[in-house]
Length: 245
Image 1 (cartoon, rainbow, N blue to C red):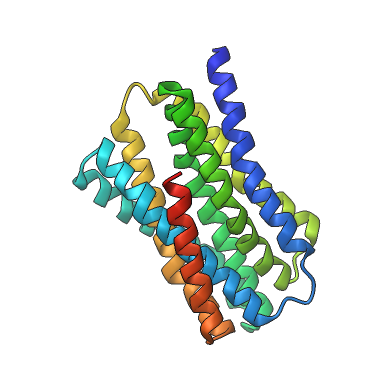
Image 2: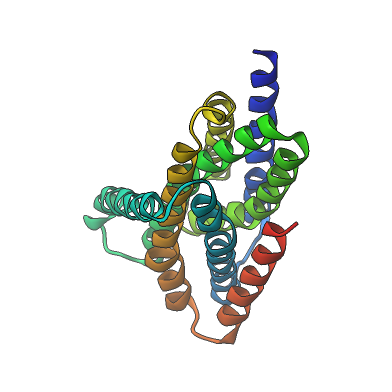
């Protein structure tokens, strides 16, 4: 039982530290230009694509099978679609000005990150249960890639008019699911790797929807120059490096 508590605390720490640090950076930035904001959103897009391609899907295929992986991806996409619809209803009665659009993007991203942090917590929990070195390296990698994700969550919310304290609260809340996932991962990791595989592919599907349905369109709407492309490429490369550490 003590081991499970330790794993849960480690998962909670690494899951909330990166996103919280990114959120603090996001709310501390003043006079954010559309070009910079577009670059950050594009950077997060590239980072998420890299995590999907080099981490979540390969890991899901390795510990499960292609059928479960495909099912998990579609479930993640469908889940995020309904989350997007529910969030969109909150703004449909208003004129879709930039502030409303950006606030909506920030909320959808926060929901998606909370969902995808859960299976990452499962991976940390099961990894720590199998090998401390494996679990710790995975936790550190997740912590690093959570920083720009926290920024990509906080900046749209700030641009949309949400208060700093409330933004930080939502950012921290999105990382708490990592600790919950780590707790469950420590329990079920040795019982069924197939469940973890489905959860990882579910996270991949959710992130894929966020990238294609929210981050990329919003980034292109804000700024159509080369900075968005550069941000996307840098995010992809950094994600590839972090997932291979």
